[in-house]
Length: 179
Image 1: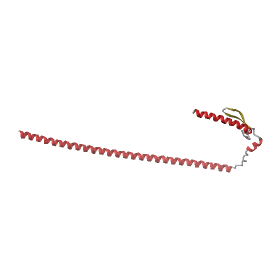
Image 2 (image 1 turned 90 degrees about the vertical axis):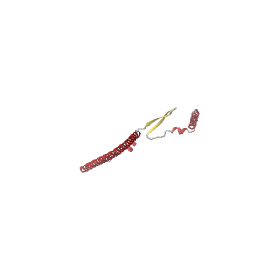
Image 3 (image 1 turned 180 degrees about the vertical axis):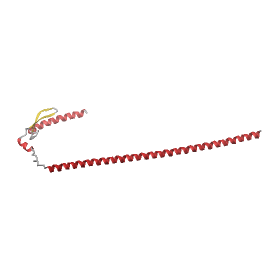
Image 4 (image 1 turned 120 degrees about the horizontal axis):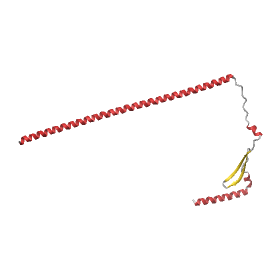
């Protein structure tokens, strides 16, 4: 970083020396550096370390230049009552046409809103119907599972009852045989 700063300072010194040599060799080039403008004078003010300062002075306008800048307006023609009536009718037609376009745009917007609302209502009813059907199927499946579970429990209970009856019979028989 320090090397870059040192190199930059040396380059700036070389440029200022080069500028001094050039100004000595070509003194007339420095005098006309400001340029020549028709309607303003530019004068350099004392040089500063941060750059240069200039004073810009506007020249007063000459009477010759006033003629070139003056634009003549076209002479007004006489407007008849019929022309005024035609212009008023044309303006009224434009206003009516614009109102009709606005009303048509509003009607189209209203139709679009109604279509969107109908579509949303249809989708909502479809969703509700599908949800209801799904719930109904789930309830039916739950009921079937419950009935199957109860039937299985009843079968097991009957099997246990039969087994208990057989065990009782076998026990009674043993008691009779041993007694």
